[in-house]
Length: 512
Image (cartoon, rainbow, N blue to C red):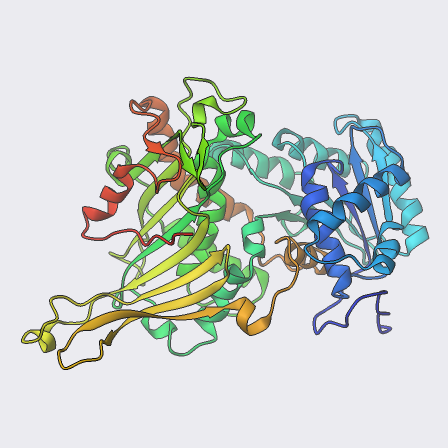
């Protein structure tokens, strides 16, 4: 194969340049496109990871010409790319952007799309490779893929590929997730379907596998013999903002747990795969997800907590409660906070609880995984001033700062034996510098080279829904009596703290 030519303003990467292709964005006029997808593609071009044989086609309901679409994106890119725009590179990039007005449910638009793609394929030599990004409402996922298949746009032959990226939410419960999987798999093969989770585009999430399996000192103690428990927290300071109508039908449990948090659990707890082949990694993730014990109806009442934020103080400003947010009913029963205690029923993790929590309007924006090790025996310190030994904690910081820290005990200087907690901290920015990122660069590039490692498979999606289904059923049958039950700017309802305190443990909080 000929050496790829470096793009104007780009830098030669160590990695593989993406295949020639056309990216078709259903919902091309929306926020996701301008805030995340186009900036991510531009950042890939700047890193010289995009093929020169590329085109981008947006489809949406809004009437717009190609030039109007390009002008709109040219204004947005400066706000969302995360770095100064190289004018020559952007000029090259925007010449490959096109737009089509269309109704996603109109079958005629797919015939027109097919001819448009054939034309762009000739103009930009994209070798017949297309991938379709569904940045749309979930009710369009199945119909769009069915229409694409009917138009022959999912057919793979003569060496070219066709793929589709499906945004979340992938179903709203187990039955709907199964139905959507069946609908897609009737017209497309599993290897063509990329169920995206943008959390997996974060460096620290990807680094979990490297950290565990590339370092000989951690994997031998990554088990029930040495680890006391695991905490996974996804805390947000923002409220529902302008997503009230969507969020009130979803809630924190559906919005975060079956996808984001299940991915974090599976990467943290999976067995070593035989290779980094996509299916080898996802086989091990699926095994762990299937090993999580679903809660019984009685356990839902004692091992899960739901909450809804009321008014409070955030960053020194008074903020409203959830029930007074735009498009939210004044008597809404939707949860904005979830905490759960889960158990993985396998040899490595038996009797090691996994605590998870996620919520809006909390005290700090912070996503992290805490691995707490068992306490050392106290015998040696019985005749000293040390009253108890603190457990070691390994923390994987995912956002806003990405890094890893290890907390351990050290002797406080002086004639008396006293211990203090110290941290060894590693931050990506300090060691490797920073690169502009929207969180989608790696995922879009992986789709363009056919690497599905960081995308969910059908069985993984369904296993995640199996875990949360009992809570959804119980919470539907027993409406909450005390909402709102935590103030904005706090760490959630008191019951979430009690969930760990009953076991003699407590949450690790990271303040601003």
